[in-house]
Image (cartoon, rainbow, N blue to C red; front, side, top):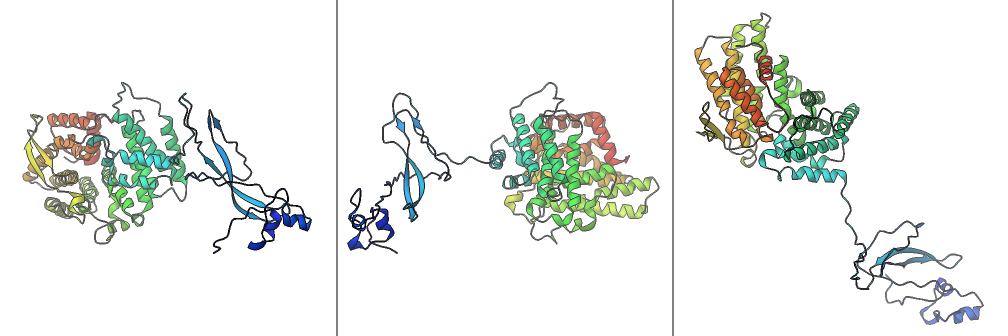
Amino acid sequence: MHRGSRRSFGCGACRRIKMKVNDECDENRPICDRCLRAGRECVYPPQFHFVDTNTRFAAPEARERPTPPRTGTEELKAKLTLLHGEGDDDGMIYKFQLLRYRSTTPPSSSGESSPSVPKAPSLSRGEKLASALAASFKAPPYGYRLHHLGRYMSEIPSRLGHNPALDIAVECLLQSHAQLLEAIQFSQPSTQPSPEYMRALQTLQNVIADPVLGTSAETVCATMLMAHYEMMAPERRSHQYIAHAGGASKLIFVRGPRRVRTSFEYSLFRTQRGRIVLEALLRGEHCFLLTGGWQDICPEKCRSIRFSSVDYLFESICRIPTLVKYVVDWKAGVSELGLHDITDIGRRLQQELRAASPRGSMSASLEGDLGFEEHRSSTLDDEFPLSIHFHSHEGAIFHTWRWMALLLTELCLVNLVADPRLRLSIADTARRICMCYEYASLSKPLGAQFLQVPLIVAYAVSDQKVKKWILDKINLLIGGLYVTYTGEYLDTMSMMILKGLK
């Protein structure tokens, strides 16, 4: 390292030949003594001064020659700082850095603007979406927080900016969520979809056609978010909500069980699993979660995934479509199994659901207390004077879906064996599902969606008075989501689920 040398301000010729300290350039102008004796041209390089303002700005390109702007009496001066020099035919080659500093003149009191202050870099579109989405998890009232849509929501912010379908789906969801929070009421829903929605559909279609992005987890997530957008946005679009909800299930099926590896992929699968079972019931088919490698997505084989009590419960719920199909086929005389075999399947499933208890590999802080208590209804409901209050939202999902599965199982058994106790149990189970309304209403509309399917199944086995009660309560739970259930719709859904079982 060179130490102790004095910075030379001599001429270019003396500096090129690296004069010794005791014989350096005397810096006389216009010609130094050495150049005078040697009879050569003496050229001094231009002099520059260092300016240290403790603020650094990016250097412009070499070909740019910006003119420092002037604002009133405030003058932004540009100084060139000598960084490095090498010899050339003209004497020196210089590299410069443009530095700006503030004038020491006090700011004028005549209202003139002060020099511009360095601004922080602007956020990208993905960063803005991530920030807005994260705020939607805590800022709105409890029932309107987007985390109710599934655990996968918390992982979306870190995945923005890589898949255009996911980015625009989040943008649409936040738009409809803002309208929901503002309580904008439309007497007639718009018949024309918004430009953002049409652009999102086109982007999703293009991404699905892509051989790489088409089956990515982010594309599955975007399809699920579009279904939620269509449920919340004040636009009339017939059955797109159902179509996109089913489209996410198809994408999961196409991806296959081997693509459910990360916690994000499993969260998507976990959230869509109830829809997959419901679609199998509506089509009268076996649930594909019982075929191929889907059965390997279980606690015994997936050590890296933490399973909840609801996950264990769904190992039994996935067999409900198969039992319903066996009973319907047996009544039609086309079953591949006999009465005894089908009854045995139903009895085993009934015992599993009755004995089901909270058990999972998740910590108590994540899963919460899954218990519940019965209290007198605060709404003075004549139909159901008692209400069930759960200790956690996870417990509400666990018990309401367990009761729904038990109700369907015992309804199948009623069509196979003559057991009067089954009819009493069915009525009691339907009553328990209805008693959960008051708890669900505390987190409506988004946090109450877990109760919709169980209420529809309870509707199928209830008398006309209770059916009217269920219809009113379902519409109260989803009030503001621009989705309205009618008696005809619930009758059709019940018939499609039960397939004529009495």
